[in-house]
Length: 237
Ligand SMILES: Nc1ncnc2c1ncn2[C@@H]1O[C@H](COP(=O)(O)OP(=O)(O)OP(=O)(O)O)[C@@H](O)[C@H]1O
Ligand SMILES: [Mg+2]
Ligand SMILES: [Zn+2]
Image (cartoon, rainbow, N blue to C red; front, top):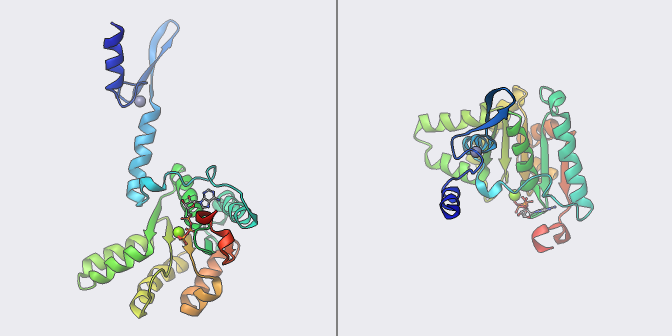
């Protein structure tokens, strides 16, 4: 008998609800109460992540997994948390965005994704844009006008946009034009952006002043610039 039970148990993904999505809570003198099982929420969250483009490898990038191990990481986390707490108030204003820039491996993507995951939990729809991949794909499909406008408008219109690794790789005029279309639209319409980039604010301004200064204006209250110093690289810790 015991063995049979054990076998049954292992064949469900969720033991609590036996994969029905519902749990029955016994009630005194009444019918048991059916409540939605936790696993449903997790499944739902997973499908929201999928829409947002955030994948499973990112799921460990949370605030609680982010260690304060030096001054730079402390400042970065404090700014990210402040942005998160201020978001409701700041989101429709001029300075409604956050920039993590500088040193490679310093946790810029980690904190950007942690913000995105927290926003998703609050039903704020974040779309993840891995800069290099998206730009490459858009350029490969330049003649397909429909693909081009569908892709660009996805990043222009979404509630919150996360641009990961802005300006990574060689950049030319068409990269600048594509990213300008996205950033300028969001700038004009007061739509928040979370940006990570290995370049300093000065370098971003140097690449393209139009883009750089819009980013700076939008992120002014939440700029995390991590000094280029391998001692700030968590991967080498
Ligand atoms: N303070 C930290 N606590 C825990 N893990 C960290 C911390 N900083 C970075 N990491 C981890 O180190 C790895 C590198 O961090 P991340 O990818 O966020 O760096 P990055 O600044 O985006 O680097 P790159 O410029 O190469 O994109 C990741 O696995 C991340 O989860
Ligand atoms: Mg990164
Ligand atoms: Zn369940």
